[in-house]
Image: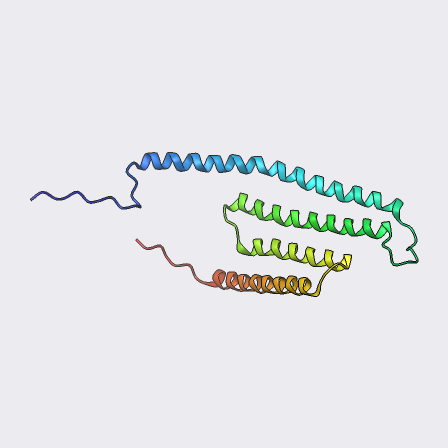
Length: 173
């Protein structure tokens, strides 16, 4: 009685050499994209910083005494725009830090994504509060989002600390 050929499982590739070549090409393509994106990120960050500097320089001539009526003075508008630009730069820095960690380790930690999202939500709250154009429902919703994100961030931090203290298991043969 002849032995029946075993069916290949999904994990077994029909041609391991081809699989290795495809994965190698994929890794090189990812490396090429990452190396191309890093200079673009630096340029974007530089432009955002320069825009904040130009906004600051344009704000100085607008500084004047507050109007006696309830209208908004030009310096208030310029200062609010400056605050938004600076907060945008902070968000870009957080996003780029997350990308750079991925470029170094090929892993994205959920805590980094939560940090970026928290900074973005806080930016929205600060802009709305500073501009004094918010409804209580919007403000409450944003605050709830920030609280949930901070709790999630705390959980990821505790979980990461607990995982770091666990002894590593030996590999199974």
